[in-house]
Length: 237
Image (cartoon, rainbow, N blue to C red):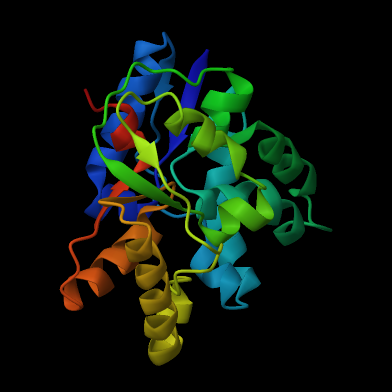
């Protein structure tokens, strides 16, 4: 099929290798890639801050560009939840309501697209490390994506997955980290401590924004923990 990629702004600017890895995987599986470079934000920052009119202005070009997409794959549980769950709320009662619902039905977070939509879990990857997995809040609580990423990791040769004791937020939350830096830092330190307790070398996640926050705090504390996006693990050999 033709897969339209929505690459979040922070992945595009800070972690482009994640997007490249996703393209490599989908093309290897025989799919054609459509990447709309003109789309650089889903409107989530404004939406989360209560500026829904401004969020709609940002989201409208997304609706128009993705209207005829066969399937939309999103490199983030956070932005995935915005389009799949919150766009229908954002456009409820407007003339774009039907378009928002139509788009939501075609949106897939990356791991969910592979494991659920395509039924693919074994990509022949090899990653000889002990890892633990961080569930981003939107992916876990809004999209319910606990099983898909773990099903993919289970097929990676040489990888040992050790779960953390609790599913807790890393403290990033986008604007939350800016508005409440002390609380955000404290939450992130708890997450780092729980990850360190597992003895893992790497923290894997579907969300580069969470990983950016965690890596910054781990580095400041002198921890040896490293972070890596799931897509990068799945392209390792």
